[in-house]
Image (cartoon, rainbow, N blue to C red; front, side):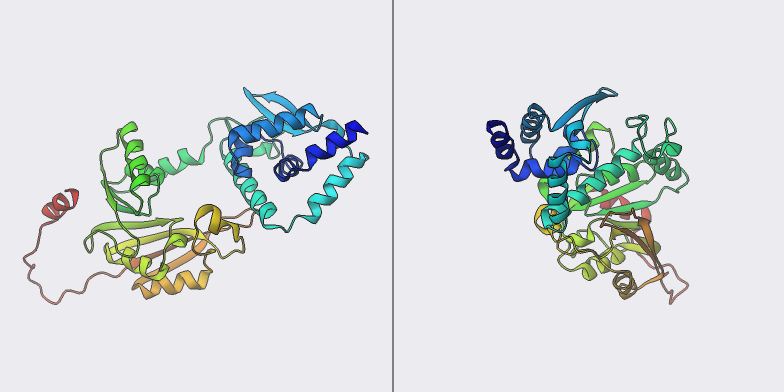
Length: 335
């Protein structure tokens, strides 16, 4: 009776039940569990230690990493405790916290799958895709070599990871974010990578600190759902794009995951295709195209890609107007 009492006291903790539910879906390491559960790494390690001591969780080494999974005692369908837990997990599947864990688990698995050289064990589900050295990052950089040296704006740049990638092929990148602290981390990343062709600006998406027609491409990657006024943000992106240039959006298709508001600060739960099209067309963009960029079965998030072209300026005179030259305009923007 003492053993049973101790076991049920151990299971009388929401975080440990969430951890067991996730491990019933996939084996994970501490870093991955931290990302899925949204808990401090020290807390995850402590819970794992207690569950391991109770014989509920097993640890195994693979490729220099420690992974955790349900212990064999819980893996069998004939175990009474297993049946009880699985019934509870099924009953709680619609709860917001559980849905949030599941969404983050799918994201962790997506990242793991793309990092083939690190997670190429014999138990990987899709072994056909395991090619040493294959990397989506490498492919994107290779495609970047085919791009002309365009001027690019990364609007809502965050900590600058996409900015760094664009800086590999762009002649200049203007990166804008509203957070001084986030921009500080992005600048530090640029210094570490010795990237010098980026201009950092603090500003809102709805009122960009940039001149008209300043760039060839304006990008909003997973930024639009943070905007107070998404339509105005798209119009601003079009304003700073030169005639003939393009506005590129990557954002989530409309979903029902309310937890992203409190956990991630999202203002909008994504956009439907027609809404994105209306915003792009309303901003004066033509040749608007919208498609799916990423989608996975069981994942509540679908990434949409949308793009539009800014119409070329209509010339009313054959004489060249007296205006700043391209060189002086770029020099002023660099300042």
